[in-house]
Length: 321
Image (tube, rainbow, N blue to C red; front, side, top):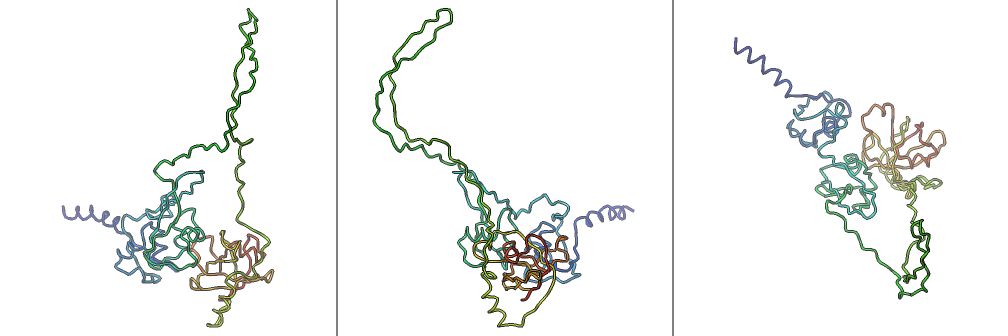
């Protein structure tokens, strides 16, 4: 009888310690890592599979007991996702935040691991000219306030002339009311010429990254798309296109998109069926498996949508790749 009581006592403990997940369509080790807030490498190691191995629909994975479901705790950040603080205080000392590139990681995927961080900013901070990354490289993904107090530079007086004595002027001193006597006492005034501003400098006005009115004739990747089309047979699809906000493309015509079929790094031609205008974009990654992406065939940057005349709303499109 005691054995049965011990078994009934320990069964709930074992059940609680072991979680499992059945793989659904479009799920990967990376997406499940985000879902349960656990590094993809650790999830792969826990299931004795390689991180490079793709997952099959219906495959059952074991989830470590320390994992937390992101949908139930969306306000808890991943340990591997430090918050990037953009310090805008003038003169504040800053220090960089680094990310070590893992195998098969892309700029787009890394930018989603850190808040307030975009692909263009990572390329700018690390002086990158292309999109390729090398495993093990330490990338700057943001800046934060340095722990050491910033040194305040002394005020420099740029123009000081010889002291000039001015003719003393009488100073009227009012004594208590009962006496009402005015005493005039000469005081020597020394005038020193010091360079000063007549009025405080006005704060710089915020400028928008969006520059309208530019037409890049399809964009920077048009030539690369034409070269790609000569090497393979093209696929054409029609469906709904949506938009994501990005700082890229407004000044150089480099347009980017998300697509579930075209491989990352390839090029796609997108045509707005309403305006018959076309642009050429580079594929960054697949479309995230979220509710708001249901029925969306492709997502492209708002700079590309602007050249297509689509505004900020979804539109009917034709894609070729």
